[in-house]
Image (spheres, rainbow, N blue to C red):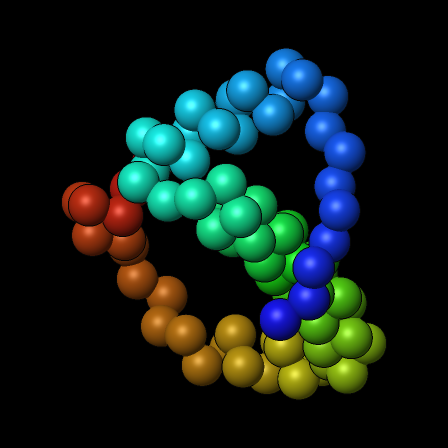
Length: 78
């Protein structure tokens, strides 16, 4: 485990403290979770960009041609 000294504006610290209390966790747990969530979003974006470079339009169209042409069920309608 690593130690990190973090400076937060007083207003942000107050909100983090309040939210952590509501969640029943420590401020450290709250911030660790927030950092992990942000990392997950950024890494997912990077992963999807890499995957998109491996795709090609012809393969996509070939796969889509296998989908039956049917009306959506009532719960899938917009």
